[in-house]
Length: 385
Image (cartoon, rainbow, N blue to C red; front, side, top):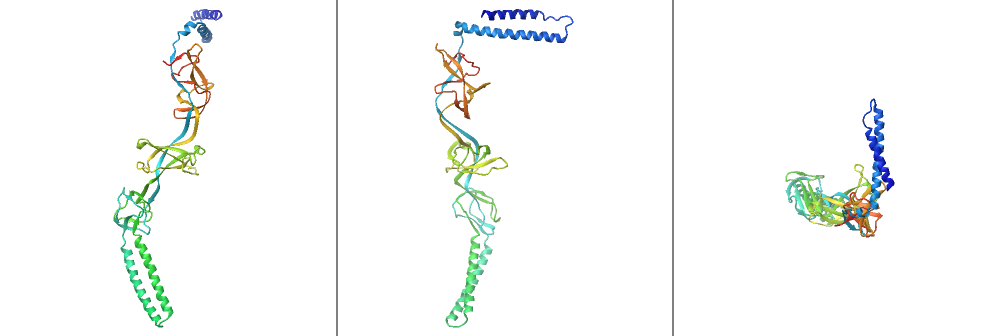
């Protein structure tokens, strides 16, 4: 200690002597001033180091002063094994598994009767609207008359044939006329049936953009029925997760518009094609029937891609980094009963939200400093009260 004190005193004298020479000398140029400034800075650095070393030695030897050190208030958490789960958080969209755009079975026509309104719940096979059928009924009536005539002619030919009058060819031709008239009548009846448009699935009328007097034909997206009894959530997953998300991956789905209602499920469909425009692939999750959930509703999807049990986790904000790597501050009790801060280097694994998994460096029972760890140094006295 005396040796260090001697160095400090000598450095102080040297600094004082150098300081007395700061008075500008006659004819001194810029180069000489810079050289003199560098010399003074060198002396100042040596003096500062000597003072720091001497203070450190004094602190070690002066036990009475050490006991007077004020402990820093911290919060401690005893570490225990727990489970850790990592999710991929994405946004999804609710879609109906069964959705139908209604079209006429024939060529279509002008709407004469409309039996539904938007929002109605319809059953499968329910009549939705009626198309103008005047032409079909006229054709049906004409062909019914032709069929009656053909049947009468056939019966006359058959009666004559039974009495051995006439030729077999006449009888066969008459029978063919009846068959052809019956076939035309079936087509007419089918065309007439096509003027009645029915629901092909049960559900709710979601779109209704047709009115009486308007034309309704093939490809017209005027009536949409959505079956909300069978829903799915569709999610676009970035391709970097393609090895971590597959059919069977557990999923949690929340619906912000429903007071954060949450349902669980698994991935039921995973596309094998990457979308070139957004570099993602589509997955689907079937969800239970719920009267609260609507088609096209936004959902928050959490795809579980990692899970571990009996592991050590810590709040991610307690993790610190220096030139040697990651570390945390823990509490260490000394033989005299005092508690000091101790720096522990650790290795980490997955992180999710405010938790990170510790794969090495911490043990069960370690007391992690979770509050007040900022600015702590090795061996600093700490307290929890």
